[in-house]
Image (cartoon, rainbow, N blue to C red; front, side, top):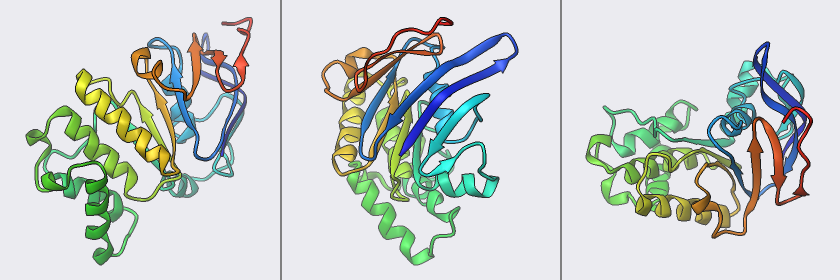
Amino acid sequence: MIRFSKVFKAFTKDSLALKDISFRIARGEFVFFTGHSGAGKSTVLRLIYADEPPTSGTVWVLGSHMHEVSRREIAGLRRRMGIVFQDFRLLEERTAEENVAFALEVTGARHNAISPKVMRVLTQVGLAAKAHAYPRELSGGEQQRVAIARALVNDPVVIIADEPTGNLDERATRGVVQLLRDINAMGTAVIMATHDLSIVRPTSYRTVELQDGAIVFDSGEGQVPMTSGA
């Protein structure tokens, strides 16, 4: 489903954000990317959803070579992904229902198909009763659940979650992680970046640890020696 082969990413001439990164992620897999701030977790995710190109190496995502895709193809590719961010990114002037519906509207979905799909995913994340609430009327955990519903509404192959619990308290964190586990159990792949090892340790999911832009451990592949640049 996703493959990185010898990927390097440089944002400046003298600094490498990623160093010789190689891994594969299968359909339906749940993978944590861990590491301290600046380790390269978010950069890996941005390369997956084509927000950044690799400086060198090969990135394959859902059958597409990311060096060769056009802007139109990137838009189509992203419709097969659900992306969740730490800061929710909800539209403040829209209700929960309207925020989720917007993700369908921009794809040109039929008007009469939107409402049933929106209520289905809001029910799935436990927020059907708050469909008409505005973001300011929701807790942080509820706002993140709306963001997850928005990511789910186009029936993605994979959910990409970049520090989705970073702004949440412990209780809300547990709820969001359990929701992502439930989504994965239904067959959707989940790729989650987090620095919070208390989330990772109780699970048996694959963990890929990054340090200074290099993979230093992958529980799916065994321990990976550090590169000379790490």
